[in-house]
Image (tube, rainbow, N blue to C red; front, side, top):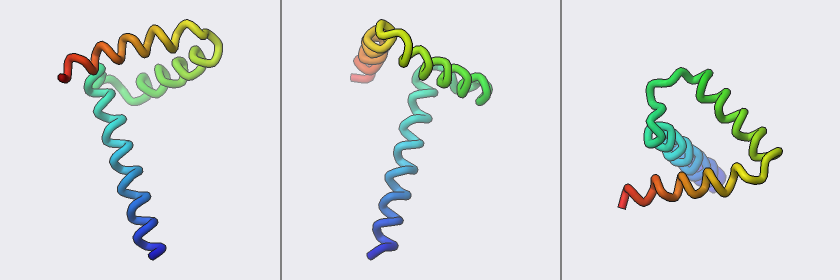
Length: 70
């Protein structure tokens, strides 16, 4: 039973990572260097903590991008 739980957790983790990678591709950043992507994400994390206007603006941009999938 413990192995099944561990296996399920690993599958869930793998699926999440694949989905996150898909976001990088969808954003048009597939060929950027990993260090640049990580730096951008770290900076975004800091901005989200210090500037309350960033989150709603980026949510709107992302929601619009997902609409193009439909």
